[in-house]
Image 1 (cartoon, rainbow, N blue to C red):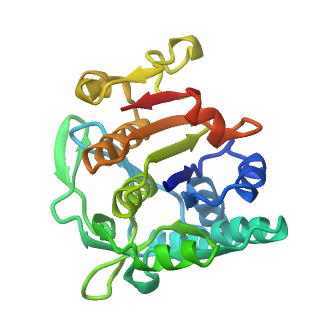
Image 2 (image 1 turned 120 degrees about the vertical axis):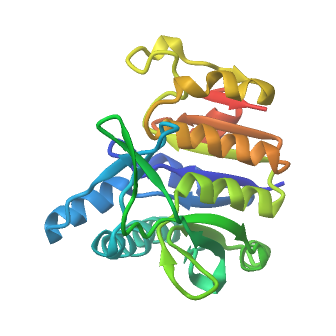
Image 3 (image 1 turned 90 degrees about the vertical axis):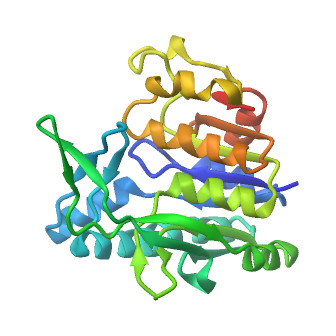
Length: 264
């Protein structure tokens, strides 16, 4: 069975150990984010990152035309190229794909997105963000059957050919569902879902799918998207989803052995 692994793009995530572990695995698809790389490239190009918080508490990147250009350059360019180069250098044949390639990830523009500003709920203007509709697994299955490790990241494509920014955690969840994966592993720079974000000892190790709604208020900021991605994967038939730290010698094996927060 396939394991879909999402490697977080926030500062503090080092892919070195993950790439060495993937060298010896034939069952994985790697999905990547790259928020730190986007921010660093944006700073060099004079495009400052901006975010907004929805009425439900989800924090998202505000994606106007300039920010979308930076995202495409950073993710489909720098981040993905470095991951694919690292895997190939280790002897693990890998191919990088954005959601645009082969119409891998289909999305539609989020019309009517809302943000909370000063206690008021306002419409988010000029946002080139997308809601994922589907993932076409044919290209992924073709690469897997030929012995290649697919490395997938945003952006996505609309039916009309518009390029949109999409959340990498949700890409990973949708890829896992489309492939009929057994497991989804979301690697990040924290131990997992914490009761208190400042206290690693409050790690929630097991969450039943029926209890996700109860723990969702604990998922602050970008962690909320990871919990929602885990829920989406389980709802689509994935057996287990894990939010786990990337800073382990074998982060995938550690996550599947109970490291982090397991949802099932």
